[in-house]
Image (tube, rainbow, N blue to C red; front, side, top):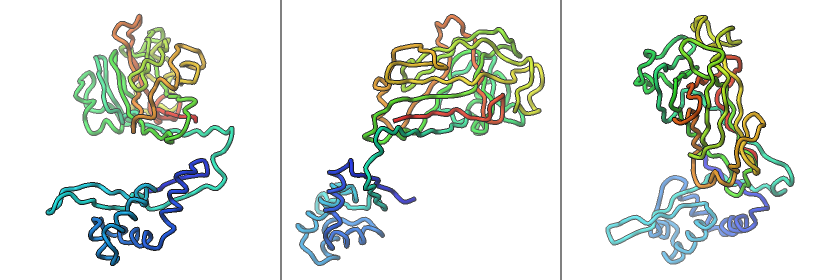
Length: 306
């Protein structure tokens, strides 16, 4: 897959670095050489018929422009700098970034793609065909088939996901939201079974929502036939948001955690945990619904606005 460097006129220094790097035929020749293989500075100099010192200067310019990598590695006569292509395509938007226009990026995460969990009986996992493994056996949450899950339930504990962090490096995060269909977990179902369900983002408590019950008195609108009547059928579409002025659940402010406190910029992933605190007033478990189960055809959706 081609690696892309995207710039605009707001990145003036970086644009100038790229322009300088591409302004000399010798540096273009170096990029051509590195298209096929990685080379050290001595090899580049030999292939182009230039002095090693000149090759080193050209490599430094290309490296500053983020067009190549130059890593120090041990060689037979001491350390050498091994050069390789860093980006394959460069795009420069000449209009600059849009002014006073917020950008929104979202990721739809299948509910079975969790990276960690702690489950307690009654618990289980199922796809649209039926239960994966057996109910109330926690090892089943680690079966390969868990990736196909369309409903996950547990009477306590948590489930955790890692979303890709797609916030641009220089962007100002204005809002982060997580939306999912969820409800409490009682044996079979119970419409008045309360549960205090908390969401943690990057290990920070971003608010608790009190689920009013575990819903099964009617069938879910998209619940598959494999789920028999008398069991959990659907949940409520619930959204946690962290903004500049605090955190919200379904537009109700529930805390003072702000986007700046989430430390989003310092990681490749955004960690989202959903579950019950051990000391919650109502430890009533949770059901999480996928795009083929419940009332709403969606997975867990994380969106960022910047």
